[in-house]
Image 1 (cartoon, rainbow, N blue to C red):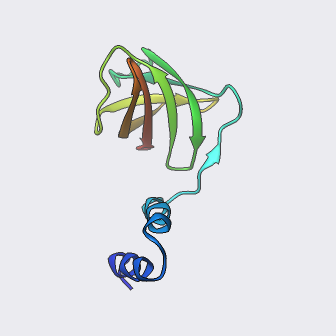
Image 2: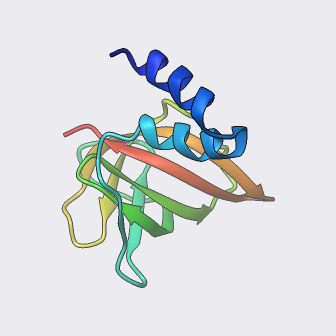
Length: 116
């Protein structure tokens, strides 16, 4: 069954509010885990050979495929932006911003996809 057919079937049997809760979960392909308290993610926007982070944020959740973090930045962050990230105790790896939520002036919540 196609994913769109599943969504239409769900819409017929549950309320609109319930569908809004279900649909965001359908696109997720990896199980998310709450990050350990005070886990930091360091971001190098240049993506060069030598890892030199310009940003640091608090990791909210993690999965095998990526992570989400909240950070302060005076640089505008955009979906598709390439970088390197050091998530907690992991070595720096290539990554890409998948989504950005602007929370307040210079405060962002971002979704990161690991590329390695």
